[in-house]
Image 1: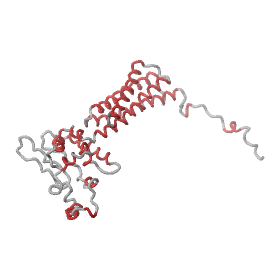
Image 2: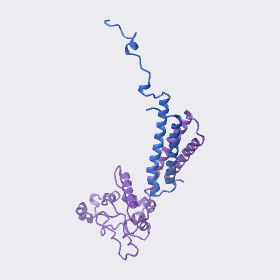
Image 3: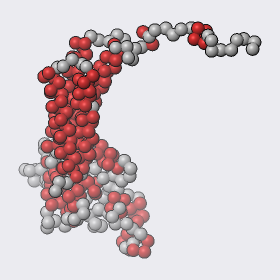
Image 4: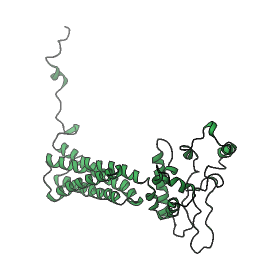
Length: 218
Length: 96
């Protein structure tokens, strides 16, 4: 049974193939520009490529939510290895074991909320890609970092803090959370979310600490 | 703006076809190899090329329609008859 994403990809590929056949046929035969040829070209240049683009965009957006997509950038490998480690006790690993969204755990925990959440998340991802290609990451001392503080509301989507069932520790730390001094994922609370960044080979120095109080965590 | 000759229009359509084939190849690449760089290129360069090729084709169609006087510009249309001639016989005589 094909998954919806695979069906969309297949549809996009079929549209691409049909359109390519129509265009190549016109380029080889080059008939006079009569009404029939114009209609032929219109379908080859209009509806079929548009259908391919629409289905392809949806499929690509869905694929880009998967953890293996994040893993295709090698700077993310240490995080993904930890998330997939069945013995790890990091927050990322615990959430990656979830049967409902484990395969998309990177996206679920790092996506922005709201109507344009997907778009702003993808724009943030593009910024990471741009940064990766224009700056030197080869030394291994650099690590992916968030561009803005991690929003605790992301945790509260699944772990709501409603009145009576709110733990005492959350009551005590609510003011500090409001001031941005601690987050859900801070070390000592529920963090660290990810393991310490591996130290550059041969440096002899330990890597940066895993959990910064606010921001800085991928 | 005068309409280009048939050979120029065909050249533009050939450019649109080749551009569209490149965009289709980029989109197909992202379908079979879902790495970030393939997805980014397909969703930016690929779709920009596809949009440009369709726009180029539509421009050629509009030029062709104008050449065939289906969509002739205002200056090339036949002048309309004066209002007095058009209305003669249909308006009531003055003072009635």
